[in-house]
Structure formats: C-alpha cells, structure tokens
Amino acid sequence: MINQPKNQKAEIRTQVPGPKSKEIRHKEDQHLAPGLQGFALMAGIVVERAGGSAVTDVDGNTFLDIIGGIGVNGLGHSHPAFVKALKDQVEKASVGSFTSEARVELLQRIVENRPAKDVHRIQLYSSGAEAVESALRLAKCYTGKYEFVSFWGGFHGKTMGTLSLMGSTFKEKLGPMVAGAHIAPYANCYRCPFKMKYPSCSMACLDFIREQVKTTSAGSVAAFILEPMQGTAGNIVPPKEFLPGVKSIAKEFGALLICDEMICGFGRTGKFWGSQHSGVEPDIVTMGKQFGGGFPISAIMSKDEIVNSKPWSNHSGSSSSYGGNPLASAAAAAAVKIIQEEGLVENSRKMGEYFLKKLQPMADKYPFIGEVRGAGLFLGIEMVKDKVSKEPLSRTACARIFTECLKRGLLTMSYAPSFRIQPAMTIDEGTINNSVTIIEEVFTLTEREGFWRL
Image 1 (spheres, helix red, strand yellow):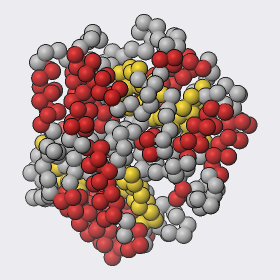
Image 2: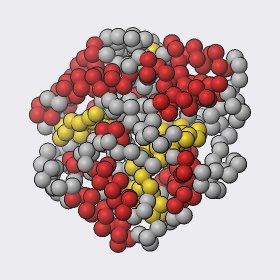
Image 3: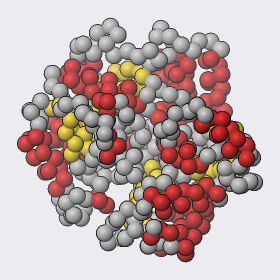
Image 4: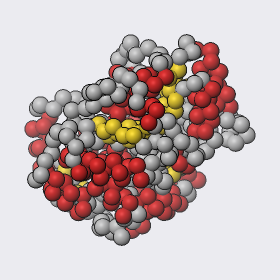
C-alpha cells in the first residue's frame, strides 16, 4: 500500500509569488550566483514544506508538483519511511568510506533488481555526471580505446567530459570539447532528421549511425552511451527496435553499451529499468535521481570482467569522497525498499497509462499540441506553432503557459517546447485529475487568447 496522501489539490491564497517569497528571494539574490534551474527562477516561490505530490510555500500557497524534482522525487515529498530512515542513520554515522550495514543493504537491493544477470558490481557516487564520468573511464580502461558515441538530444551532465557527449546547443561557447566524441541521431520519431515515418522508415537512423561511426571515428570506439528514453530532449520514447540496434552496432565496433538510466531507472517508465522495454542488457549502467529518493547519490553497475580493469580498479581508482557514505546509503536503501514494497514500479505503469489517456486527446483538441507521448510516469507534450512544419512553440509562449499553470497551483516543466511530466510515482488518479484540470484550463486559455502564436 502506498503511504502518501491521495487526491491532493492546489490551493492558492495570494498572488504568486507571494510577499514572503519575494522578500526571501530578494535576500537570496544578493549572494546566489546566476544559473539556477529555469523553472525555479520563473516560479519565484520559496518552499516551506512538501508532502506527497504537493508543495506549500511560505505564503501558504499549495501547488501540485508534476516536476518531481526533474525525476528525482519518485517517492513523493517527505515519505514517512524515507524520513525515518534518514533520522535513524544520521544519529549513528553520516560520513566516511568504511563499510556500513546501510551500504551492504543498498548493494543487495540494487542487485536484486539488476537489468542483467552478470551486471552486479557497483560503485557509488554523489551526482549523475560523476557516475557517468566514472563509466567513461571504466570503458576506456576495459577496451583500451578512447572514443565515444553519444546521441542528439542526449544529456549526461555538465562536467567537461559529459558536456562533450551532449547532443544539444547547451555546450556552445564552452569548447574545445574532449576529443573522441561522436554524436549520432537519436530515434526521436516526431522530429526525424530524415523526414521519414516509423515504421516504414525501417529504422534508417541505425544505418546512418553505423556509417557515421565507420567513416568519422578513428577506429577506437570504447563505448556507445545513451539514455534508453531521453529526458532533457522532451521525454522521448524511441521505438523498441532502436536500443537493440544500437547495441548491435556497438558490438560490430568492439565497443561497450552504457545505458544512462539516471532518469529512466527505478520504475520511472513503468519498468524497473528503461532498457527493459526493449530487452537490451547493457554492459555498464549509470543510475541516480530517484535512486536516492531525493538524496544526492548515484552509481554505476557493470560486470566482473569489466570492473576489474586497471587503473579503474586500483585502490582509490574509482572512489569518491562522498560515494556510498552511511547517510547516502541509508537514504538510497530506503528509497529502493519503498519502491519495492509499495509497488511503485507497477503504480508508475498504471498511473502513467491513466495520465497519458487523459492527455492524448489534447493533440487533436489544441492547434499547438503536436504530440503526446510517454512510458509510465515519463510523459511529454510536444508544443508547436504549426503542426505541419513542427516549428517549436516560442519560449515566450511557453513561459506564459508555465506562469498560467503556476498561478493556478501547478508546478510544471512547460517553459520549453516540450512540456515534461514526471511526477512522484506515488501519485494517484485523483491528483492526476486535479492536475489535468489545470492543464486543460491553461491550454484553453492559450488557444482563446492566441498567445501560442507568439
């Protein structure tokens, strides 16, 4: 049984942001450097408390949260069992690299749910990019090669190594990038660069990827790295043939397959791992976000023969100052336990299907909705100026949609052309209905006032 509130509702008592939020934000702005997440800056609210799928600010306004900490908040806010686990552990020990019972429990729980039988050796870190960097080093150590293939729209972090793999304009003016990165097209069928339609395309993108690597690499590809479903690109769900096809190409080039499960893993997509939707067994898995239930922890997992590669396996060769400390381990162990015992993977599947059915009619109803897609509670709405050209909705229009949702008590990631939805996996039908009501109200306003044409 899911131990979180049901049928949660928004309640707005003041202008948003309210006077207390404005006062506190002003103090913060005196010292906080720029670069905070866009939706946090645009909202301007100051959070006082949160529970389940609801967030209450210092002005007493309660918002429904379908951002979910960008996929971090799988358990819902302030889950009682999670809070208790953290309180219990912080009174015992919180830091250090020595073995703890919490870390042993965490490792066992991850292995119980591993995506492949022989993928069971784990190293722990504190951020997604840190884990991805470790996976890249491990692939280089094992293969003796140095090149990597990543994908358009992919996001793996903001360190220099992970930026080099990023398939977007985010890395502009941050070069030069790390040598050896090749970025290939991802199977984003709505925006197919080959102007083809699935399935009649016969997955032409895979043939292109093969030829691209063959003709542009130096013949030293260590690994292909991808998200089984892309988050930052707009919660993109590729055809089931894509991931097996990429693995097959990687094998042709003697390269490993790294599945970056930061946002897909631990039930987000309705299966424990995103790769399980296509039956692919990765060589290396990176994990984070809801893995820690909101606590900063990440990890990589691989096979015996791979993790024993040197210098990665040397003493301190793959360690991290905060990796696997007792408090982080207790938090993640509690999170995985809750996911297992409360059936959150199945709830993600069921509630995701329910949410998707509520959203899909909008593609026909509104002139600015190009596509509605999703897997589990990993949902995306593609917002466009024109359904034929698929020109993305302007940032001005998207910002207005975000603000209108906020004013009505809904926290969204609707400030870019893709309206991303990844709420807590504890969400119920009542809370979904209340969220959809606000989305419908705002989309109706958007059409009536015509600001989607901006």
